[in-house]
Image (cartoon, rainbow, N blue to C red; front, top):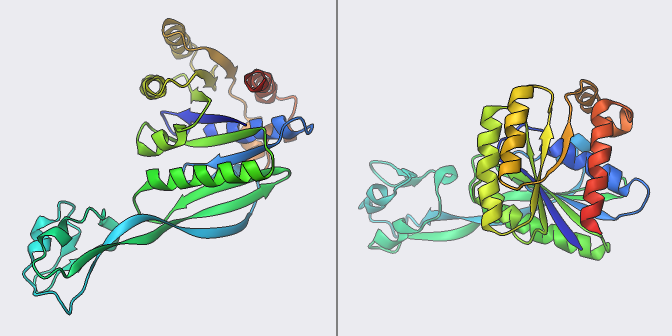
Length: 294
């Protein structure tokens, strides 16, 4: 089974829309069986793009929080002054602000009464979605919760298990934006990374950063330029940078009003408007991705 992860240093460049479209095209004729992993756990939206509802959800324990036993607490307030995250407040007794607690455990170390302990807590959930023949495993972090990288790792492991059970050819991962811990967790175990960008200076800057991360893990990668005709000069600057850094340009997708129209109706552009410019470009890219799977 191959693993391909679709990333973007910058958010909002069309990563999830492209992931959903490729999943549809790859499975359309029954040629491939695949599982999708939505690892943008801070804002998962792959199920929305696919127009699917959750089948079931299960809670995930991927974070630690401090808890105070007030029967033991002497109100010395050492924990208040020791907390680097200002997650313990109070004047008469210490009170933990749960959502900002990082579970580092310093408060338990400085407590003379051993009244503070750190325990695993549920901080998110994994949602399971079926869209046609495609199984989706999506992580969702609780509001204000942290440890998104750990949750991404759990999502990837669960998605691999689902893919193995169904005998899939491919695990296609919709990665989180940026270059932080969640991205590194999404990259782990990948055979190839598709980096989505757009012709703007900020997108090129973020493409350069995510490329460094991917190359640091020695994972083969290629780029996709979305909305490629939006700014011809910036698009050429991006192409020149890709050429200079020996990063293949897998495909370009032009700006196309039909795509957002389809998404607004809860459908995919490649399904609703198969002959639209963006759909034809994605179909061409789909053939390139098929080549990666051979």
